Length: 430
Image (cartoon, rainbow, N blue to C red; front, side, top):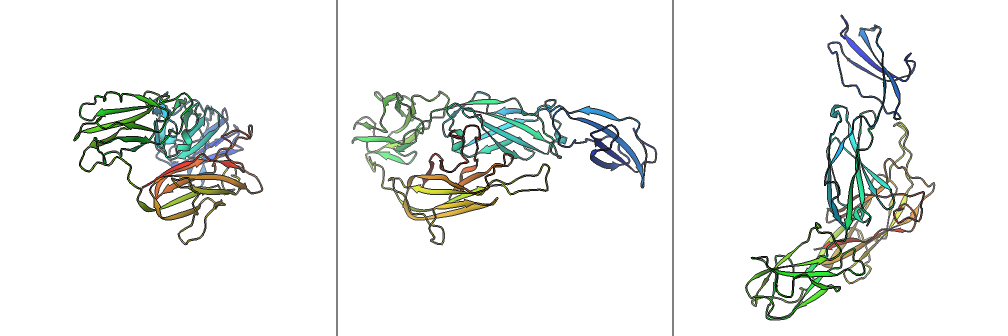
């Protein structure tokens, strides 16, 4: 209630009814009779005592009505929104956006969100801090490689560090991916229908024994499959198409399905033209191109200015290799021609840029290995170490969190250890 003559009001939150231990204080103008007051960070079920003191100049009045509250982190929660709970993801999906909504939150008291991504096999969580927004984007095929799937949740953080509980989880399945077609190329592909040719594709990242590739050629105008090429099975990565199968002058689509995948996993189709005039029944020799690969690393610095104080993660080192489309190890150099074989992650902003000149187009494999972790060993779980990979300034992997599993050091998800080798990071060089 208003206090006549007050120039200001002082709102106090204490841990005791005598206000001997005031944990937070805020001064507001004397013409106000209500505000949104954010509590400081505290364990769940903490008791707080609140009062409002009128102030005139340097003189304070008294408050005869102390409010006693107990925190409940489950009282108000955000809620996940999309993709829908139970959605299927392709193995090593390169890109995904997750969205949530305010739910029962009072957004005036929200400073930012934490997004929790938990792999089901290991139950290890990586935490991404985002602003006062309702979405997060992951460009990280290494994130979607747990064959048992994963779950996501979000929590809200107040301006003084108080946190809500995690939202109800959305759980997702991971399914075998469909392969990428090499030939005929999409949109620009031309084949001579009067000669034999081979449809060619890369292996799926996940192709279990007993799986098959199902090849379909359709008339692009009608969508009707050609006889003999409606989910035609093979376990190879190519399929012959006899001369005379295609009609000269018409467009066709070709798709290759992984038989073990899920029905709703996106299946790409390549559109190509059958023409006896300029058709080529072999993939063209790869062009020579220049490209650059940037690898960035982060490990947090110690910070004694926050509460509780943040300790730093150990310095560590990446070993770096690049394999060309023919399976050869490339000698790596930076922009000055200096050899590059490793990257020391010794700050919050470590990185290296690899330059390549006159290399053939195709699919390259970047291999990263944590070769060393330097003493003293330390891992800060509230700002986890991470890395990013960019190809010609375009993100391929963005802020991949380097997880740790102290309970099961031999787990495939215990990444923060010497000798841990990441799955190949595929780079399509064009």
